[in-house]
Amino acid sequence: MKLFSKIIGALVLAGFILPGASSNLPAAEYPNKAITWVVPFGAGGGTDRWSRVMSAGAYDIWGVDWRVRNVPGASGVKGWKFLLDRRADGHTIILASPTPILALARESKPILNPAKDIKICALIGFFRPNIAIQKNAPYNDLDSLVAYAKKNPGKVVVGGSGSNTLGAAIVFKQLGVKMTYVVYPGTGKAMADFLGGHIDIGVGPDEILLGLAPEKVKVIATSSNKPHPKGYEKAIGNKVPQPKDKGLKRAFEGLRWVGVHPDTPDAVCQKISDNMKKLLKYKPVAKLLKKIKAQPIHTPMKQAQKEYDAMVESTIEAASLLGKAKGK
Image (cartoon, rainbow, N blue to C red):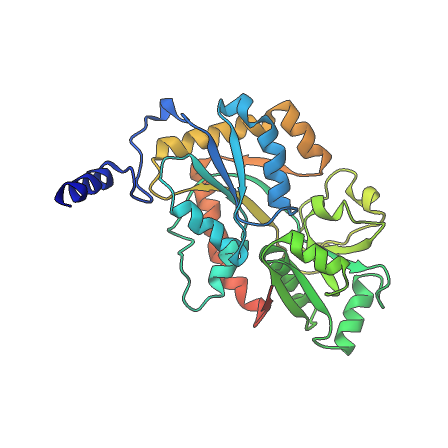
């Protein structure tokens, strides 16, 4: 028994079985095994689609395979916790959005601290929450929806992932209408319920709505003032007003952030940032991202951390807009 205890103690000290143990692996040797790429949402959403596209060319840039792993639950928090339970060696990486940050902000006793329990290696893109309606809805554009909602306060049900729903809430708050919000753990489930008629308004990113409009739904607004992707409005069949078009002062778009365990060495995180920059520029990947109307960017490690910290602050501040939102 004493021998067994000594062996276990030695393994813990060596970092072999201690969750979150940091790595002494030199950055020059990173990566030396397959990457577990965590998608903290279910299949079919924007984050999942981005990850599948990038994984197609990952080996050519990283020299090792990417194993994309969906770990949905608690609006992205479960996947984040999964990351924290792995070694801090850079071989487990998460791609996420403001959604889990929003989920934590709305909890009275959050299990994670979004400001401390992550190290940001890069920002690789943003998404614009788009507000879509059913083709048979009693309104056909943003103005008529607002008029309807003012006559029927709280009757219109709006749903999407946390980030997307927050974008819609920021718009509707400024327009002076009361909606009922349903926060979903991911966009895929939200769009399924929207198409099934379980909610009135579906909110999702460009790459998801492109597959639905104009045949199944109509996109009537976006919460972002960033330029529409080239050909976007033509593809969905109509003009899409932005907050500035309606005289609104506040806009919102979600950042796609790449993070690792907070104890991961900075040199490893920097190498992840460098590899992501190369991957986004890699022609096969860039071509596929363009095809789904994704808008990749690359913000390097130090600046990415600053922008992430600012996003955490603003997301927590805006969380109250959703009120006592229903969760799915």
